[in-house]
Image 1 (cartoon, helix red, strand yellow):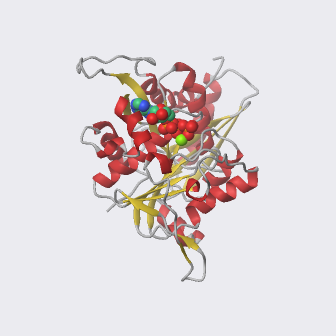
Image 2: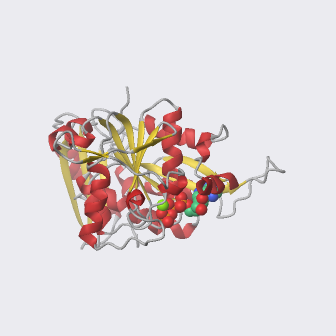
Image 3: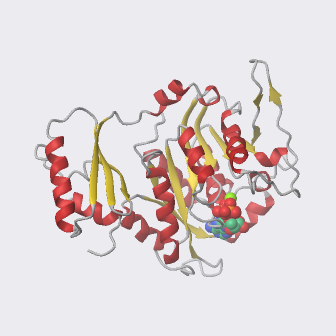
Length: 357
Ligand SMILES: Nc1ncnc2c1ncn2[C@@H]1O[C@H](COP(=O)(O)OP(=O)(O)OP(=O)(O)O)[C@@H](O)[C@H]1O
Ligand SMILES: [Mg+2]
């Protein structure tokens, strides 16, 4: 085997059957965070309760990988973990994130590369979740190019500060029944925001931790494009339930998606990737409602999701109104033709990492 990737490792691990449960260890959900570094393959075996068979399974995993990847320099390391699923709420309390105390799920919307529709997906996901009856907030963590004020037509809003608790907390802007926060509310739109690394990452954390969110089922975090230090620092310090990666269907996006996934799965961060959203999947002209034109290639995101063994959460078509609504400030998902975003919201709710009553 020449170049190995996560799906190759996944395939190899799928051949290993748990002796008692008679199902392969991947399907049982025991494998997490496969990471491939230069000469190292790492992953975790996570069981919900102590399992005496795990050390034998671990040995078989290493042997299977070594026998399939004919390279004596490759080093396979496996970490065994016993962990209850969904430790999220407890984690928040432990970390004493006062602002997030009543926030049940925090979901990051990320992409390896800019301009793929992250903010569009984040805003419309927020609206779709709200339409399904959940309490939703969204924070625009794009400190360099905040776009939420424009997309929600709240450019003129000025957030108030509440210091009644002895700590200055910023009140989010409420519109469409959703709580919004953006660094754009504190800067003039014609002034480019220039931050140095640590300043940017602090500003970003403030946009999450210093906001009076109150009770929320979902806090959506619209991350800036890329996978740099600022992202890693944020993703590390915020008790995320998981991340949604947005991509367009082009084949060249594969590497960006890989970078996005790696960012959340690295050992230091280790947050679940809930799945992939394929944006701009096809175009259907109004006058030919049964035709789909796959401008950026057909099912590219679907293939990527299979490649990385993560769920494909939704395919969002190119809809001219989506672009126009981004400019006019009324999210597209507010209209009654936004099935794709409702599907995305439902699929996120159905994942293991999210919990709602
Ligand atoms: N499905 C879609 N149909 C039509 N237009 C879309 C769609 N998704 C995004 N767009 C448009 O594409 C442009 C880029 O989208 P958006 O700003 O959401 O991307 P982004 O990934 O957040 O970008 P950035 O990296 O700059 O933050 C916007 O003009 C948006 O209106
Ligand atoms: Mg954006």
